[in-house]
Each structure stands twice: as structure tokens, then as C-alpha cells.
Image 1 (cartoon, rainbow, N blue to C red):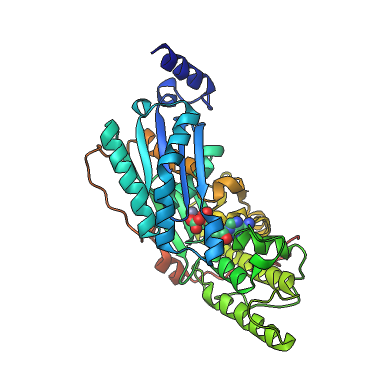
Image 2 (cartoon, rainbow, N blue to C red):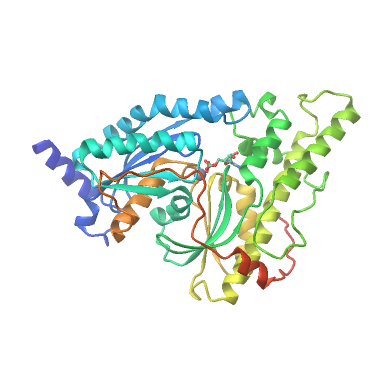
Amino acid sequence: MFQSKARSLRRLLRCKHAAVSKASCSRLVLGIETSCDDTGAAVMDGSGAILGESLHSQKEVHLRTGGIIPTVAQQLHRENIQRVVQEALDRSGVAPAELSAVATTVKPGLALSLAVGLEFSQRFVRRHNKPFIPIHHMEAHALTVRMLHAVPFPFLVLLVSGGHSLLAVARGVDDFLLLGRTLDEAPGDTLDKVARRLSLRKHPRCATLSGGQAIELLAKDGDRRRFGFRTPMGQTTDCCFSFAGLRNQVTMLIKKTEAEEGVEEGTLLSQVSDIAAATQHTVASHLAKRTHRAVLFCKANGLLPADNPTLVLSGGVASNQYIRRALLIIAEATGLRLLCPPARFCTDNGPMIAWNGVERLREGRGILPPGVDVSYEPRAVLGLDLTAEVRAAAIRVPSIRMKIPD
Ligand code: KG4
Ligand code: ZN
């Protein structure tokens, strides 16, 4: 009893923001993430302070098998979720009885992966009689920045990961306007597939890196001008993305180079760094151009504040420093400040889900009693779809030289 009081007092003293009341600081949320290939959990107080967290990454296994096999991902989530949640709780010193709510990703994502987190969470909230907060994975990526900086709504956000790419105006915790989304694959998926086709696993410096990380590392030593790829959708004046055509261009180049050098598929080409640099540059330019148009659309329609408008970049691919610099060029040219969470909060993690729970708890939105049955949704749009309106506006973007510093 005394111990638990002492723990609560210590937590209140750690409360991150002086402006947040003691009552809301003492609200404790357990966040659980299993939408793709990371099993994550975190306990957070109402001010956004992370009291304890744990993450199990499946990256190693999926790198070995050449991509995420959903049944394997599900099995690994099953094997790890109990331990990951227990570790987060133990590190926080918070007992389940002290929690105010449990927040868990229920959409979008891999069905088999989502199912593990949801089943675990529903059993947990029923056993401990706690409210349940279902979380939209992309909403969580979009709001993570507010855990770290005081960013008021509305702001423009570009989310780029292995499963998604989208541009949206965040107007409130669960109020988004969708300006653009990918028409085929996500940029992280493209980078992962290009890295696999280049057999970067065989490269001594890349063996343990994700495809995106490997491409970023090799691109540093490459000449992006040696191979020019066409930036996708140059003639389409909307804010949607497409990466499948770029992947096709890269694959054709790799095949041609293999034929010229008389080597088999699976051989590490001597030009990998140049191919990596050109691929990364084209992804960065495409993201930058669509974002530029989104800023102009927002300005034309008064969707962002005149004072200190903000562009947020997040999601796994946002860890990429070259892509960050490309977006900085656009932000500076249009008078926006660019904010990116640090890499560990860009890739999937438990704190971002707990934070989304904290934000929803503060606003009293989407909080369910423990007995309510919740379903997972592998596909789920974020917010109100304005992509057709953006296309109809057909905004021409002034050309900006994408002279991105290496
Ligand atoms: O957000 P995330 O952890 O999971 C999804 O929700 O997809 O993103 C993972 C993706 C992978 O495709 C990975 O290759 C990519 O993010 N990624 C990167 C970098 N680090 C991770 N892409 C480019 N540059 C990086 N440094
Ligand atoms: Zn993600």
C-alpha cells in the first residue's frame, strides 16, 4: 500500500508538463502495438512521460525470409506479446489495477498481426476491468509529434512507412482531412523490395538493416546522377503517390546491368550505391513535390494557421535523413516549420499508441467499457477523403531545384 503511494508520488514528480494538471498526469495508459512486425508496449502518464516500454522487433526474421510472411509475424507476436507487455509494466512500476485505460492498434495493418494485439488486449481489459481505447495506427503516427513538442491543431502531416503513405491535415485528435494517399505501394515497401532485389543482405554493412536503412546507408557513397529515374506522376496535379512504376524502372536497370556484366540475379552489383542513391533521390523528390502541392492547397483553402504553420513528417521512412532534407527544402520555400520525431518514434513503437490513448482520454473520445466487442480492420482510411477535391483544384507547383545536400 505504502509502496504504491510512494510510486504514485514519484510519478507525479516526474510529470512532464507543468501545465498539465495533477489529476490528468496521474492517468496512466498502457499502449499496445502489433499492426505489422513489431510487438510494442508502453506505459505513459497523462503528460506524455514514458514510464516504461518494451519492443520486440521481428526485422531479423523477416530479413532472412525475404519479406514479412503474415503467419510468421502472427506467431512471433503470439510468442512475445505477454513478455513485452509485462516488461513495459515492470519497468514503469505500474500495476494493472492502477491503469486508467488500455489503448491498442486495431486498424489498419496485417489482419493476423492486429488480431493478436486485439485479442490480448480484450482479455486484459476484461480481467482488470479497464476501459479500452481502439487506436488507428496512422492517427497514432500523426499525433506522435505532440508527445514531444507543443504542436497545436491544425497541422499538415506526411506519413510514410512500409505500409502507408499519406498526406493529411490534422485538425483534431480524430479529425483528419485526407489530401493524398498511395495508389499502389508504400515507399517503405518499395525501398524494401529494391533492397531485396539488390541482395543488400549480402552487403557486409547492410546485413541487419531494413531495406530503407540499407538504401540510405549505401546512398551516402553513391552518385545519384549516374542513373536517372523518372519522378512518378509528373503530369498528375494531385497529392497522391505511386511507387510501383519507380520499382519497375529500378528492376529494369538492375536486369540490364546484370546482363551487361554477365552476372546472375542475386549477385551484389558494383553499382549498388549509385542505384541506391538514385532510388532514394527519386522517392524523396516525389514525396517533396506532392507535399509542396498539399501546402499550396492548404494555403488556398485556409486549412493551416497563418501563424507558425507546421509540417510534420513521420512513419518509418521518415527516419531517412535525405528525405527529411528534401522536405525541409519544401518547408523553407513555403514558410512552414518542419518537425520530425526522432527515428525511434517514427518506426512502430508502444509509446505512440499509449500517447494516442492519452490524447483520446483527455478529450473523452472513443473510450469503450471493457465488455464491448471490437473488431480489427486491415484497411481503414484516415479521416475525410478530400483527394478528389485536391485533384479537381489541379494546382500547378512552381519548380524547385531539389538540390538535396548529401
Ligand atoms: O512505420 P514502420 O516501422 O512500419 C510500418 O508501419 O510500415 O516503417 C517500416 C518501414 C520499412 O519499410 C523500412 O524499410 C522503412 O520504414 N525505413 C526506412 C528507414 N528506416 C526504416 N526507409 C528509409 N530510410 C530509413 N532510414
Ligand atoms: Zn507504422
